[in-house]
Image 1 (cartoon, helix red, strand yellow):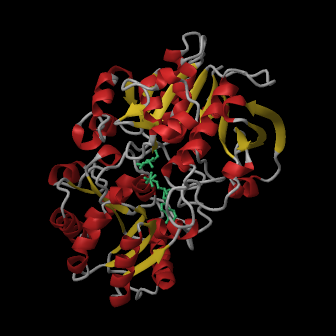
Image 2 (tube, protein in one colour):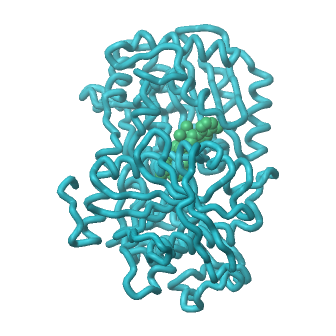
Image 3 (cartoon, helix red, strand yellow):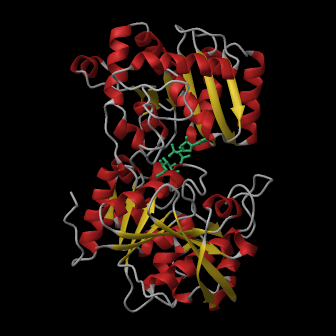
Length: 490
Ligand code: ADP
Ligand code: GLC
């Protein structure tokens, strides 16, 4: 049996700001279902502790390099049998709201020490420096917040195998050299082959340079990050490590995202009972204050409002979009300029555009259930989960053909339509014009009910199960730990 320590900075439903939370809430239970002995480890944020219910104090751990003692609190991820350890150190983690940003929307000034502490604790637990008689064969790290773990473990005589998964290369965890010194990180890590990046310490480089194997969350993104356009200056290192880099697509949590049983929806439906989706559209129009109209295509957009997501393209195209026979339901938060610009458009066109600024899981489900189409014009997208939820919910995705969007949405061009394989609309150019033309194609197809239904049903019947993705990870674990049991693997 593989024993895995899965290190993350968020895990649904205890803490989620985006797709990493979804992945860390779903992949470990899927691995457990395949027979792995998996423990998730994450900070004990205030909201996570409140959501966790009963917690058992597992042990106290001294972290000498940081002069602190932390407690590990154990529970299971709600609704699953997967164990999770919360690293309790109130001065670092007992804060409300977003785990990375303060109330002013800026990163917490002590994010370097906060996530260095997480890494020190993960490394200690991986090396059995605690009293616990449990040692993982694999330490699976995710994004920059856990990037120091592979670097710290690489300095040890007999470390467990390490995997580092890149969910988003744009976030790197960069801090001044003084932070490197203050964190008392071993000096041998300070080199351009190590943690140093243009005079700063880069936490993500700890993962990229030192992990035994690298993965990212789609095959196309695995190729893209090896190019200057998507590599943020790390493409050279990633090309160097190309032989150790794999793209494994994320899956969908079927319990949470299932139109046949979603508690947030007015009416449940499936590809066999598609008529019932119309009731969700009517309910969404009512909730958003949009006029009721079954025939007007309703486009949904749910997103962190950041540059990655192509919100600037949407804003540039908006005056023209608002002249088309369409309605929009937008949910998101992030960049204040984007929030203001969207809100201004909505105030001027309340019968066309509804904008909700904030984070709202219930509304996210209702938009997926009620909209006809889903817009995702991301400039880059490592995997993307909302287009997968959209496919599952019969809400045809309109996407920029990059990263995971390219790997999961099949364009309704003439050939794919004829072959019955189309599942959405894709566009190539990163311009408002290309976005407008893609939306135009979607609207034209919507007017052809038979063709549209075929696209919807083909999308709904795609399978993006976590079990499939987990089998790929299991296979990978097996290749790193030769005596591990991988009988379940692909
Ligand atoms: P990313 O992780 O880059 O934000 P993904 O598409 O992988 O992008 O995942 C985003 C996840 O966060 C989805 O589950 C999406 O529904 C959710 N999400 C994003 N913004 C909001 C919001 N404002 N309210 C509710 N859910 C949101
Ligand atoms: C990141 C990416 C997103 C991906 C998610 C989960 O936040 O931006 O594309 O789906 O991680 O892997």
